Length: 157
Image (tube, rainbow, N blue to C red; front, side):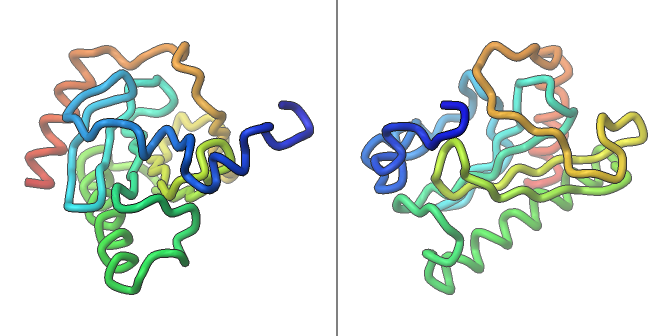
């Protein structure tokens, strides 16, 4: 894939092979633990040891690639969910800064990466070095992840 978009990019864009559309809305999966949900949004605290508190907020309505494809009420509810989750992450983890990354360059389905930034950050003063996940990444200690998820769910309750 280096230097070129994937061969199935058009199918990813139109949603016919969208991994996020096909995924089940469960409280836990191989990627993480759901800490917040609305009718059209899930926030999943990630298992991958990328950064403590790393959370993915996923649009769960119809397949949408870009935020501007949402109706005004949908956009309002999506961004409100992001702000709600980000505030809980900031309250719980007390980071120096929160980052919000709405990319979709690997999975073109609307989702936003919430990344707390800390003193021992891998890239102080620069964008977080977030790479696509393969599923083989080191994982956060399961007990710590479960404890964090329970505390965040209580904050978001």
